[in-house]
Image 1 (cartoon, helix red, strand yellow):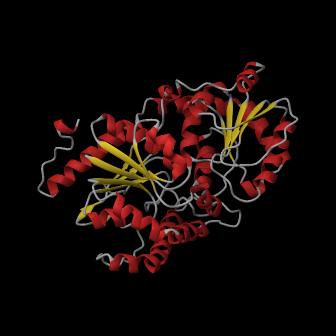
Image 2: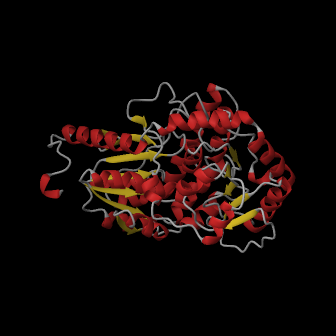
Image 3: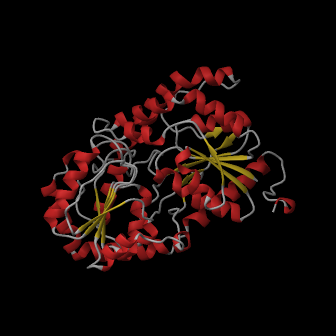
Length: 434
């Protein structure tokens, strides 16, 4: 089956699609990933097809993670970002996916599902954070993540989805009507009915880190995390400088903030570097997408460009990062006590989960980070035995999951179900296509 996998966002949003796409392609499907040009090499290096879509992922992340974007503001900013690129993105996808037989996509409100609706092909939604109503936890971008209230949790989903739907209806309806599609409905939920079928939803997370809420319908699945294995970095060769630093002393602490590029990152990194110096710990600081010069006179600190987490994490003793779901999962699987410095979006949710799971100290929101506070948290991170014990046990249990295989199995099951409902043959891969 020809599968279009559409992902727009940061590395954490897109990279899991390389792992899932690789597994689907191994089963005989023809997979093409649709994303921004930053990720072309990533996808083609594992043998997947790639189509560059309009948009700037770095600009998106800079807008979403601004210090002033909080709570419901994240949702409205997300919709505004979608509106800005609506026409070129939709027109490009409309043409480039004409021969697709299925679409799998990251959350981008109803932008991507609109294309599947137009082409009348099965659509599968993927999620990395909580977006479906429940009474266990608030919607990922909501404030008061630690408040244990069923009423508050359910209210956040109603408000969040109603806000998104109203804003999206304002800028999507004219395009939809012009292309023969009905206007969007205003609703207080995600809306998973498309062309007479129920949309399957795959959460790329583990019930070990976030138990599946009771009351979710059968179309919502938790697959486990979509992570790489050692084979994905078997050909990685560290720089001589990085190897020398790792060999020169005890395992360091990893510090990195991935695709976060908002605000004044130079001042932020300066505070982080001073906090590392005050702690006295050896550390590797990953620059991620931050294209800035970081002068460094600390012999206990190594500043790195890209280093695969799968290669690096087994060589460090703890992790400090922004709280992206994939980075967090990789760190847990490596048995790393974790300190989260959330910038926004779903990151405060994951920061709270780290605290509740007992695998790291209290998080430091980005706008509250100081060198002194970071130094204090680093001391807790590396010296409190309870964090090491808890994360080691959790990591061993996560390692027994295979989220990529689980997800691929569910996708094929849902596609066969779709074809049967359409009265078509449920054969997904024909012998001549393999």
